[in-house]
Image 1 (tube, rainbow, N blue to C red):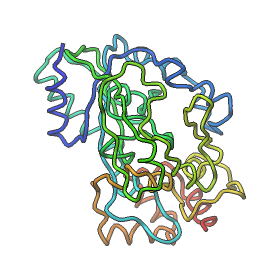
Image 2: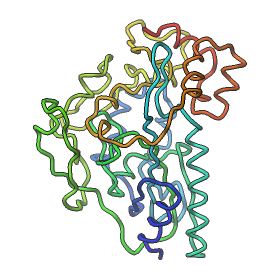
Image 3: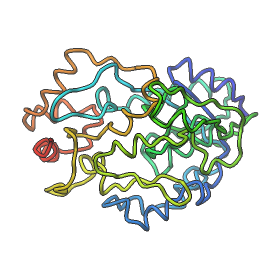
Length: 330
């Protein structure tokens, strides 16, 4: 058994913004309505989401003997943003987050093992069928917002998520937070709404959300990609989403009706209007040189683009996709 307080202390020292630990168990359909999302065709051409469904629900099928899931947050909100055509989502401004988080997580695992020699685990950052958002909720770090992204009450949704699935147990597991929200706080009628406050732990996290009655993200999405189900759960229709289309869509031509609002890689619109993100601290400094380099990519050739994005999250797309995306930017 390991001590949760020790793990969290080491995580913060290494630069993680937050750490929570949940018991490894199966996520119920009510908490993670994956089948309904797939049945509606909202996964578009992401056929890989149709595989390993049970594994996505249960980390014990991913790591034999798994008993705990350590969820970790790293922040990426930029102190300023790109301008003009060919904009890029903020998470891709700097180094590839997969590489950065993996280094940090391996360092964390090594330090935990120094304290607890029997500790064994596997780190994951978008590298396996495991739902980062739902485990961060289980670990008491926040909730899934109406924009379908994970939201931390202090840091908003500009968060990279990763987890370590371990065979160790901990002395004290975290539980999902229960939130006290006044609807008028997030109605969009108040200029500077304040974040909600965690008041007590809650075992059942389904439908637990700190967004109140706020609909800013839904109204701001130019393609109306967010749907609210009868249960109240938000779902993202990837077919309408700018992020999906500019990254995952491999078609030669993007939908004629797609309004990218100038984005050529990803999209931050539903995050930029979120009250939690307005109050969240900036953690990435976009200096003049980097900003100029990013904005000059609209005029780059294949060699320049490939070299610049080699250690960036933008390596997810090929140059021909980039040109396709830039050409339809409005």
